[in-house]
Length: 172
Image 1 (cartoon, rainbow, N blue to C red):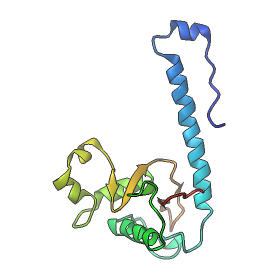
Image 2: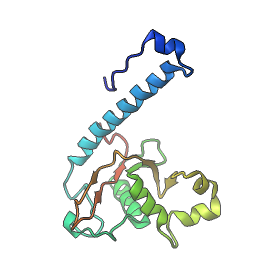
Image 3: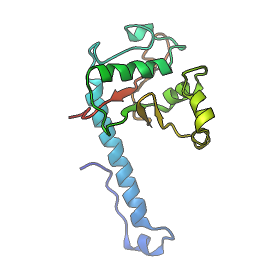
Image 4: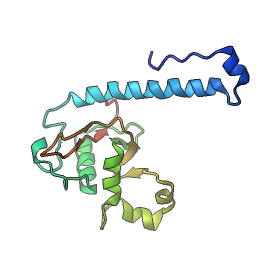
């Protein structure tokens, strides 16, 4: 079982204006989700072979610069690698990409033809207004701070972010 232990008192439940039982359920559920995310991340991070890892600007973390950010081409490359290895999509339509909010910011900031923003502006601008990531280049994006961030993990004082591109039974 995962999740923080939360106790309440009869006095708290009686005198509170809010529904304490709902709040307790949310605290326990959020903590459980965080714990399970970190267990899954540990399994994914253990796969360090070149088959599974692609660095933004070369073949080693030391080659990553502050300007080495994720692009739409990187997302297309990841989708191609999964598809050519016959990895099925979890829902039959989209793979899953798990990324840190800073990585999502870089992906959304990319401009030009083939970038995330251009089709959203002309086809469905409501997603931009709502702050939705949605689907892009065959991936359903999930934004979480549980994606690995290594402070000063690249060259100099550059942070190293890990984005996970996953197919069906990525943990099984």
